[in-house]
Length: 151
Image 1 (tube, one colour):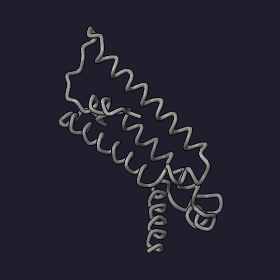
Image 2 (tube, helix red, strand yellow):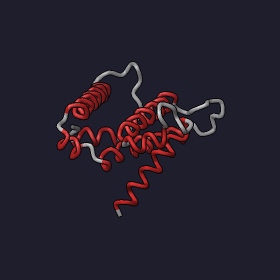
Image 3 (cartoon, helix red, strand yellow):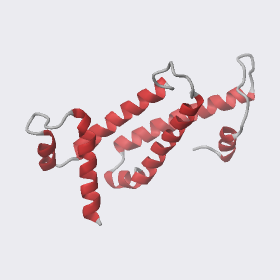
Image 4 (cartoon, one colour):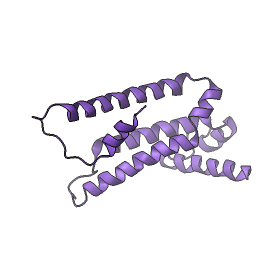
């Protein structure tokens, strides 16, 4: 977990240090990066290994959507930063790859959670009835069917 001082450090407006600079600024950033990587590994471990009742309490729609929205906000900042660069296909290739890979992984997760009855309806008996581009639309349709049924 980040301390309040680390949060303040991250939020502080400061000039990027140069390669020649050493000392506390670089060390603070290094420690924060390593701490963030360790937190992500811990979250990944918990996502795989927590007991189902604990999993449902930790990994809620609200907590995970908050994380997704944070990435979206960051991508919007990146797009602004690259505004006017018409030569680039995407403004941040690594972030673009992350978005596509995460959406594919989450789409697979959603596919795994669809009941057998709907699975056959949407994907057919061993062959797809819908093109791959439409799978997201079909899963979204199921999502809203369930959502409206609850109300």
